[in-house]
Length: 399
Image (cartoon, rainbow, N blue to C red):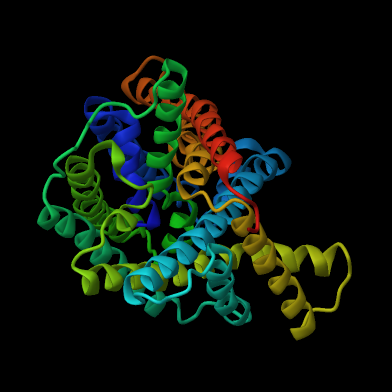
């Protein structure tokens, strides 16, 4: 549940401001917990059948053809989007470590090269046939994300509020403020992103009529969301309180002292995004190879896997090198891909499958979530895209 998106929350706060920022964080926490509960409930809605994939649930709700076309493109955008963002995150964290550890006379190495260094390990890891050993990767990633979140807010506290701190909006024009606000919404949406894999996780839990899988799953969700609150709220609020609107789009880039601790935190981020990249890439590899074998009649085996997966890693690396803008990418993908799958698709499916009474409590709550989610999906990519465009004006590509 806790992704690298947590690092951009202080920056999102600087774009949203104190009042709206806290409101957006809390409302997102509540709405996404509610939609997650819906997905856990819908997993075994039909007696004797389990929906192990998001698109299977989509097909049950919207029909065979339409369900696929609604869900699969969304999931692909989410998975590819996360992988691109993680490429940038990994590269930037490695660059920060290099800057902190290596003093004069050290040559400045371009971000492009660090992203390539980060990508190099994925060319190897992508060849793993499947993720039977994923529990260890998940455990490592969970420990890492908790650790770097804690380091981020505790190091901020020890640094103390900056003397020239300002909490106003950075943008000088009204339009700029509004667009930044939209982008901030996307940054928050990106941080709440566990819904894409929740059914796959629940599918691994044994289930009987007396003891359905939703009971242990729901306990797990509650624990995960308490951890999310412990990670997200302190990082967002303390980070913004200490740095104000001068905070970097990745909080760990704003911190420099104590050196060993910040280096450790950045290395934790690297290890975490290495694992997470693979987790999000696996379903893409799966789809890619299925299409190549079934539609293009390629022979399944090592050569196919080697070529297809390496091309995918190369593609995400190329996009990350071209647009290494962490904040802008988060705002764009957060709204464009995460808002539907996290905020309102589960509600639409719930209305379609459960059919609650019109104007009843359940019906009203779902419609409120849908309206909020659609606004998020429409508005935040505009802000994120504008940020990318503004940053690319001053950025020399492949320089």
